[in-house]
Image 1: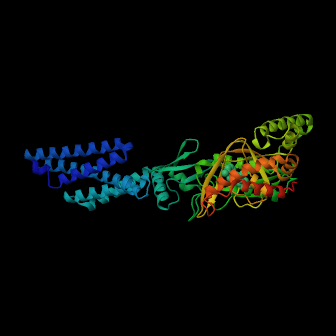
Image 2: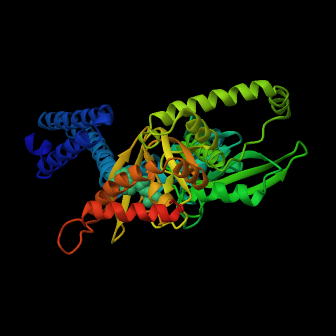
Image 3: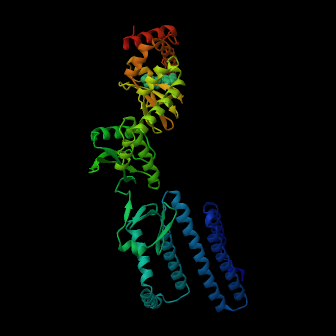
Length: 506
Ligand code: CMP
């Protein structure tokens, strides 16, 4: 009886099953229920074979053979299923190849059929007659299940011609989402709103659908438009230049480098404004709205820095124009706020109230979005001095081999850009917005007036400049031959005379 039940292949088979089961349990823990079912089925079949052995021992040869055959087929089915799961759910994904579930099913079913045929043949049944009968049955079943078969064949076709793959973003009518599974009858698509849409495969086969962001031999990225309006009184080349130069210099998450974002004039409206679009390629299709929002913020701040106003609807213009007193009051409030901020800046501590007011009137509010490069090292155009009102900016120096080093982080009340503005030298470092940063920007004429009125300020600035210069030199390890800095007071005198020369101070 034992010989009938326990052949020489039984032990290796048992070990194989247990090894696969352990692997599946470890790597596909979430599918453990299906694993437990398959294992249960396998052991029931083993037990069935044992029963076959018992019948054999009781001299019931025919019953024993039939029982054994049935359970051997059953055990084989369980083993094929386990192998299928091992190959398709662990081995192939390990090589970054994730076939959809339908492919696994097809392979496993073919293996089942082959196994079934082999065993029938082994049991001495005539395959020819079985095939003839099964062909008739198949025809009848196919007729009865036209819809289902349509879906199944649809699923197969979708797989075979690669028109969609798991992970693709597709759009059908007004539903867009990511394909998470292609099943026998249907395809599952998860939308950004956390809905799962089930499309019958036949529908996808019969109707057109968009595969978003896919293009032959190109990375997945999807073009999007961010719209904004500016009054017709501003030259379009200026608007385009301001927006593009700010966006192109900044690294923004999920925005492709190539093709680069571009800003174009799309329309001129009869209401008196020009309609622009910033077009860019989105690399993570999940992040459409947040990335659009980020770009809107970049556009807004770039325009604001350039003193360009976004066009408002006619009604809004009417309200603000009519209420000029209100506007004046707002302006005064803003100037008072600026004076309060300037008082906290050590650079302006010598200025009296009237001088501070004069300066406050001449400031330009300049917001920067996180990641914006505010000054670029080596830039010859050093026209502005900045005072930070809110947020943080980082001062970097570029080293050889494309490396950069952080010199210092500046925050509220700190100023920068003075080295270039006061001496006419190119920018000594790059200053990058660490967070969103709000600044006031001061031009050269305003600084010139201030220095003429208060020459003492030049003196004070020269101290700060020397200290910053030393810090920069250390960051760049740019020490002179003696291994130390030049005499600091000597340096300060040099800087002071450069400033005085530059501003023609006496
Ligand atoms: P500028 O050279 O015009 O442009 C880069 C600016 O970075 C520079 O002016 C300074 O305002 C600022 N900067 C350079 N070095 C330092 C430093 N060590 N500490 C603070 N700010 C600095």
